[in-house]
Amino acid sequence: MLKEIRIQNFAIIENLAVSFESGLNVLTGETGAGKSIIIDALNLLLGGRADTDSIRTGETTALVEGLFQISNEDTLAMAREIGIETSDGELHIKRQISNSGKNRCFLNDSQITVSTLSKIGNRLVDLHGQHDHQTLLHPEIHVDVLDLFGKSKPDRDAFVKEFGEYQNQVKKLQSLNTDEKERLQREEFLNFQISEIDAANLSENEEEELKAEKNKLRHSEKIRSALQQSQALLSEQNGSILESLRQVLKDLGPLVEVDKELEAPFQRSQSAFYELEEVDDALRTHDRSLDFNPEKLEEIEDRLAEISGLKRKYGNDVAEILAKREQFAAELERLAGNEENMKKLVEEIKEKEKIISKLAIELADKREEGAKSLKQGVEKELKELHMNGVRFGVDFNYPADSEGFVEYHQVKMKPTPVGLGTLEFLFSPNAGEDLRPLAKIASGGELSRIMLALKSILNKQDTIPVMIFDEVDTGIGGRVAEKVGDKLKKVSKTKQVFCITHLPQIAGMASTHYRVEKKVEGKRTRSGIRKLELEERVEELARMSSGEKITEASLQHARELISGH
Image 1 (spheres, one colour):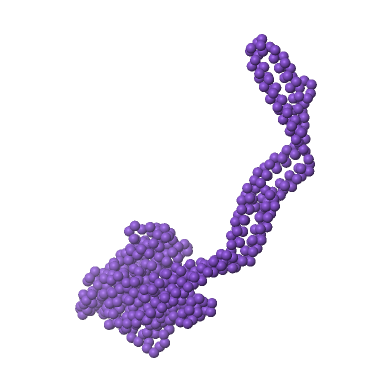
Image 2 (cartoon, one colour; image 1 turned 90 degrees about the vertical axis):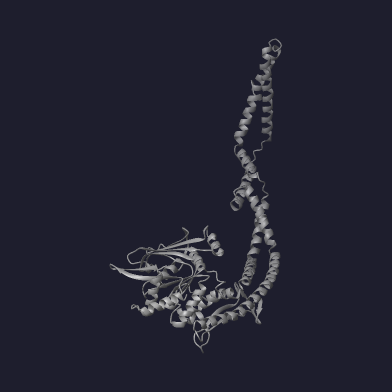
């Protein structure tokens, strides 16, 4: 239910705050007092179109806030999906519009988009009158009303689930078919890439080894010169290191037995001699192995250029190139299985079409049966509202499609995301006139009464907790007004109902009565609202009955209207 609303700087409302009760809340007041402005502000709060002309003259921003107490788990789940948690079931909505165009929406202090606000708002309030929330003006909503009334929502949910899976399968197949040419081209390209990499016969450490060998070849003269000089110093020239060290060993050897302290230096010299001999051998071996071939250098540079070219195409190093080759091979394998996948998918789609066809036909049958009962129920309710001669109907349209896989009423057709074909409510306001689309011919007052009739028979199934009726009393009075009031009272047993009315017969039914008043203070007009106590209600109903001149008879009649309910 709507617990409270606050409005600041909206039209002629400067600052308004009011708490509401459960049951039937009636708003009355003189024409132009601001009743519809309050509804307009609530419409804005529910995600309606923002208009800067609504900002109070002289102000730069307008603010509307509402506090709702919610028990419906689906609505709370929707809030949780956008990150809004509420432990007590309260949703605080705030919307600010600005002359600068910076309009903001908040849900429990978290900023949200207008589209999100609208989705939440549609689950909170049903607003009936000449406003954006007139759901009966949108034929796409009619199927929801019929499913709600005919209790075909579970059938629809089952169909929607299967149809969603079917659509995904069809999209996948279409993608596979559309991409067949691209697939063949891709396979050819992948084969080329794999062949190119395989032909290179890469090994993971090859590039580093080639770079090292290239570096060695580029410095070949320096290496050979150093080797030759080192060999000469070690063993080849007169007085070489090894020759000198051999003489040291020859001189010290006989003296070791004489002077034991020479044993250690002798052994170390001996070790050094052997170590240097090994160094000399290693240098000679390496020198003999060197082949400073210019052609070899050219081959290495060509190979490195080949690897560099592959790196530009496939990766930063050889390891990445080889990894990419495995990716190409895996993709090629997947593409190779594409035809088999298509065959399998076609069979799956055929099986799904059988399931969908069965569900769609069952749903359509249930809707057509529900439409008969809905027609009878609405016409009965409208007659009780003294809309005699009116007729109500449901028009089913099943477009034929030779490529469709569902046959219904001997017509082949394709299903839609919500079932078979489309449907729309029809209405004839006067006897003898043809049924025509409801949205095109019903007046605002007629729409409100039709919705009241629908809500009367849908009361238990409908999950929207708040209903607002504006103009429901247009063009009626007397006994009809009493019937309208009775139905509003009936609906208010399970919903919080708001009704703007000029009729005392309806206002007398109120659980809570509010008067909207307009005052001129200084040079500014201000609109306000207040809850009426019992005697104030009596005076207001008397004023509504007899005008500004209230008589004892009108007061007595007002008391009777209130006491009777």
